[in-house]
Length: 365
Image 1 (spheres, one colour):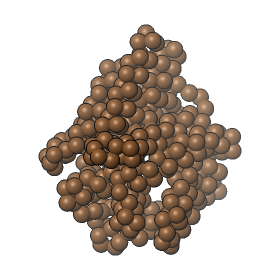
Image 2 (cartoon, rainbow, N blue to C red):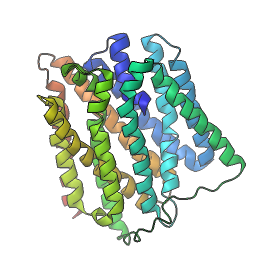
Image 3 (cartoon, rainbow, N blue to C red):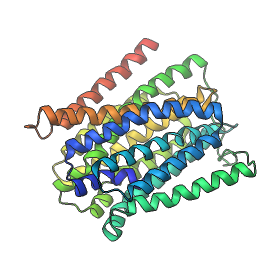
């Protein structure tokens, strides 16, 4: 989490990348993630979860180790692509594991809260680590975690531990009865459309945060403190959605979150002061929390091949990670005279997604 959150600060400060170049890099990473995660999910379904996890953690560790020693732009880009590819073998498997079992809905909630808390903390402290220990910390800290997790995978495989779905004994009320298969498929399609657009906004935002930090004269440490608020808002949303299942298969929740996403995204990128930036981040985090949770829940609830559908879920994320930054970079390339052209172009793209969501719902009805 620390690595990808602060990778664009590294390219800004070490290689002089501007918003356009960082957006282009983000688009490349997203494009690779789209195809690699789709195939990695299928691979895990065929060859086993442990095998996929070993490949994933191994590739990420190798990419981080190489990146810590490379000084060239090309070398760092290649290292980022290797780390990115390794990650594709991990998320679909983890999502498959938490989606199996009698109380999978609760397990998905715990899974979402766990990774979101870690992401928020990584963003919050990442800037401080950089100021204290330098940019090498964004390689060495996650590398240590990757090596520990790789060792745990070998250990668990050796003792043949069957994954236990967390949340089976949470004391929470049972999940609501699953609706008809036709309805689950409809919401799966809605979520598969909404989630890429959420990540269009997320990955565009992460890539231009170094520019926002420069606009408000924030150091990497202060940028981490200020610009991580949306991550904590997402954690709050995950906890609320986990505790209250009443949003399941309710279209009004998904469409409201999408509308809120569009408005808050535009406000963040065009914020005239820090107060607007902070308030917009709260709504942004809540919106993407509901959209992401919906996508994962509906993807897994309507499927039997868990890791393969986890790969499709992650591929949809990768598609959003590619399209948003690509549109933003293209806007800055062809309309450089308009400082807000990237924000306007991506916001227009999000509006198209909103129209598509309404269209699918009306057609399905």
